Image (cartoon, rainbow over all chains, first blue to last red):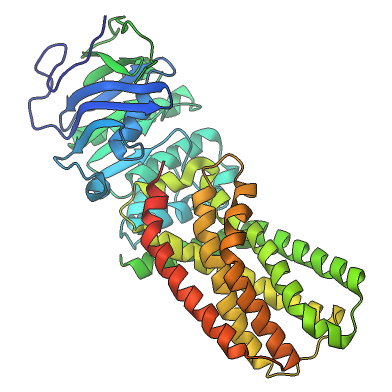
Length: 246
Length: 224
């Protein structure tokens, strides 16, 4: 059985009361003969924390990359803050990928200074604030290559936050992070949501977000199969498994 | 921040990364040194012969060595997928291109400064024409090598065999520039021929390809 929610189509029908900050309309992304996303339509409201769940290959990362403009949909449109030209809204987007997106030969502050400059930020204060916000010392002179995996993940989060974006897209932020650090990161992200930011988190560690996420979005075979407030997700899978004949 | 400011910040970052890793400069110098030594043993030319062949050997050596730097500058952006962080930022694509091209220009200029005295010793070179003109040729020729090289290296970074792909694309398109830089250098060293014509050709090549690269780079950066 195929399940493809239309805009405002959700399990309780009332999950997006305000104007959506992110809207996907019939989005498909096809790599060769493989459909990573299949006609996905969904709307996501402001000031909410969304946990995107699913098995490997379900299309979570591709959907996130399509949302931030890194993967151009083969079909359909992505709208952010009412704008289809995603280049125009990049200052409002914070993106943390599975790789760290950091230069290993530079220190944490040097990395943040560089990425802040790309957003027109020329002073150190936001960088120091972002580092402290994720529990790192701005005075740390060690190069990122010498950081532990957990520290890299936290610095990567700081990089995504440094320009104070309205919407955060985080791909596997808790991977390789110990439970204590992961819970600390969840607390930081919940605070962001409480400040009115919209947060999307792709993760395999759904239990970390129980009681924190406003909505769990389940994906399988390139489609959204469920949107619920609570875990566990309904185990509903589309009939076909990601292949397309175009 | 203006485009110039972001270019400056990106260039400073690239210079800092290279200063710390020395990936590009070490391999370039070592490669160019090998070429100089091997050619000097192969030909053993007289001073007069050297003046006629040195232009070709010097610029081919610099072209091959530059490819190493060109691959390195973008390989750095692929590690940890840092390039994606730039792509999702509002920074102009051309700032990244200009910073990379200027960085490569500096790396190749350093290589030339180190290798030119060695060439002169190994090939017993003395210029008959006005030697200061060689500096102008060097600037124009180096820019011709790096501007296209930076652009095509960016194009080839997502291909599977990018180290092979870059020379395959870059060398054919560099032939007019290579012809101009070799002919201008030979004309100056021997004091024969119209080196000004070749310098004008190099300058036109630089302007045309810089413009084309700047116009197309945004598409290349955001291509999947």
